[in-house]
Image (cartoon, rainbow, N blue to C red; front, side, top):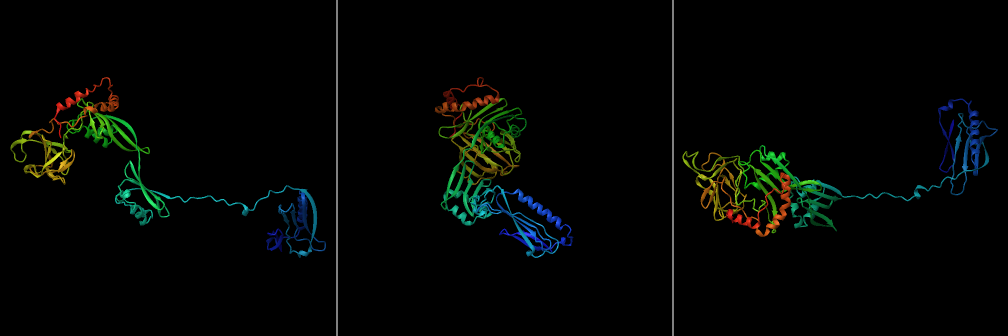
Length: 521
């Protein structure tokens, strides 16, 4: 029979019966272990001191069998607030233990100085400080795709239709949310199924912001300022303009701007040659450190067959912006040189040509531009449509009057653009129809005629009238604003400003402009 000593919560020892395989062992080590334990107890008591210490040593009585347990309990008294410390050493006999009454108790008084343990507060007495966790709104970013709507986006975020209704109810300021533009960005902050704020990127410079304010949504448009830098590129034509421009680091967008800028002076299909050079100074726009836009071109020079053409961007005092050469002449002529993007000229201007269908010699008073069916046709100048419909061998045709002296004809169309009827006023570059092969035509092409005072002129060689130039009173402002760009072009092209020709006097410029060509209304 074995006993195990435990200490209960009231700090009193408890002897509990347990089963043990050690019960099969002999009694030989009983007295030896008892002696060792008594010696250890004495050593412990001798090392203690300070406050009143009371040690209870449980010993076997003389009349009973050898004790079944030796228990040493050390109790420390050090005042009301010191508490108690207990140390228990127990020897368990292998034989069945006698009754508890057979044990005798001897009390020994020992005095020793002991350091008091630090007083510790109970855990329940300490203030409980928990970190404050803020329930932040969820932030979602969405790039608008084709077919997206505000309702569809909100549904994906588990925001109910009542949220859509509340925001749309703001009225006109949020009307743009009814038709979202693919590619634009929308940022939504929401919490517990309620929209806290919504930001929709209208364009690069404007952002719509809808915010919840006192249970009511309010809208405002935020303005963004783009960071602008000036860049310069140059290149040499060795094949096509577009491939050469790509090698020089120009985007297709900038290349098209260059084509439109010089389109009145240079035919980029027929006129350019290997070795021609181009120099471009342009702006780049950045938003949050990311390039988002290129252009416009600020200044450029194109050297075609060793003849340089310079152009400068200038904004008039009335806010109108256009391009002019260094002398103040407008780069934009009253007419475009060609009305269509063509692959080749299938037939040129001639006063005597064998007709491919009629097989007779007759004059060909225009230029035929071969192009795929459906290619857009643009009017070469501002004017008023005088004829639109089917016109004999011309097939479907449109005739436009430009002022009192000029007239253009566009024939063999597959169809006329919607709304192009007689009396309609059109602007230069506006689409008026599409390439076809109606009338007497062997294949899809545009037949284009240019008439001056009723006389047919070769569209490829006729000297086109100039548009409005810089007014005399504005020339000093123009010269001052373009001078920095002029100097930058000199550096880019390798020419110093000292060797560059000076601009002629203002009055001479205006006089020459008036003598050159009659201006068009």
